[in-house]
Length: 123
Length: 110
Image 1: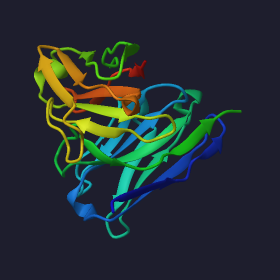
Image 2 (image 1 turned 90 degrees about the horizontal axis):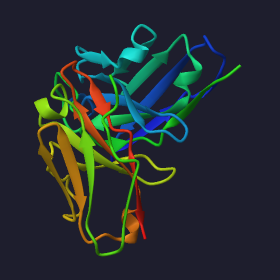
Image 3 (image 1 turned 90 degrees about the vertical axis):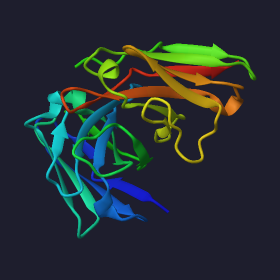
Image 4 (image 1 turned 45 degrees about the vertical axis):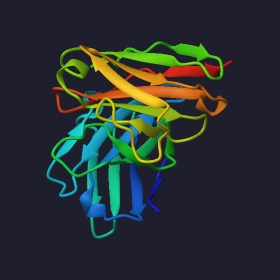
């Protein structure tokens, strides 16, 4: 069974940092791109970042460029999202999601999702 | 980049068909056949129900179908059932090598 389990969320002050983790199991991790998608309370989905299986290709939405960094450790079947310089508008549930395949780009075909980890930015 | 445009809400009675639209631009929906649709129930993670405009993942009911014309994609749910109630999101690949989601549509089954 495919499983994605996020962790690392919590309450942080504006300007603070967190490292989110996504632990994968039940599939050949190196065959898939992994993405981060967030959802602010009561709001819609927002794609945040993607990373290819080889880590060669990484992409970010404009609002997090320069503040967030995605990485993966294929030996540990894990993906990470380092979130720095946090703002109130970054408050959201952060999901990791598996692409249907491995490729240069992410086309938004996320066939498996974790349960999410909540990041709250507040003083 | 602005979100793709979806109606805030739609409703229908059991057995009926409904269609949810998703409007973008030539830089996203109109330029690529990489439109996906997701269903989300309260407190749950989204579920992929359509990819590449009109393809259904294994296990998704054939009551769900997708299409595209120009800069607008559509999701049709036929034979509406109570379990279809929830939020629906479209997404599209963009010319900026990014992904855009729609604002979401709340489906109410009357």
